[in-house]
Image 1 (cartoon, rainbow, N blue to C red):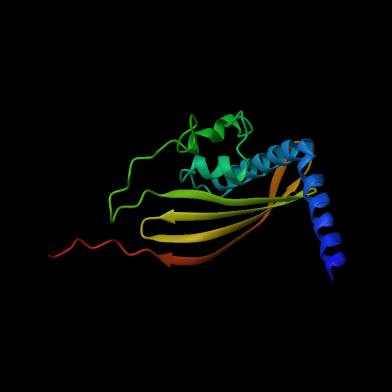
Image 2 (cartoon, helix red, strand yellow):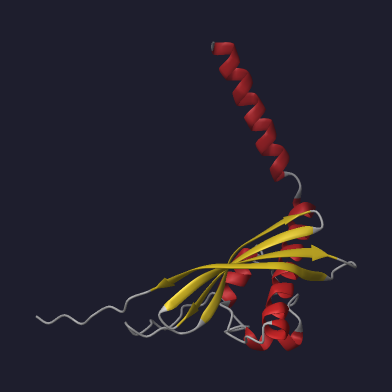
Length: 163
């Protein structure tokens, strides 16, 4: 039994080292994730006609924190980012019971020439989820193939204390 656990530990160590030694894949993954997020932003603005601001910190983090952010987001689409400089800088606290509409990119999963982008949309007291299926066409060009929208949730305001 001792030998099996030693072999297993060695395999896990080799696997972990192999994953760390491939920085090119990570840089390419970040670029692809940002391109997929750009396709989603473009789809929401151009096809859905919805210019709800995107939480730039969520886009930045879902794209693996690219050093040149917001490069990779089409210049005309940058207007819907809630901020382009210092995307994750401290934000002013929200007033209880008031919501700022926003789209937060929860994650971007890229697999070859396809990607799935998950987002949460908050408008007023309601929030819902969007799942985008995005495909790569020409190099660097991604387009949205399908959108699924579900789960409207009501967020109740915090009531002031009566004490």
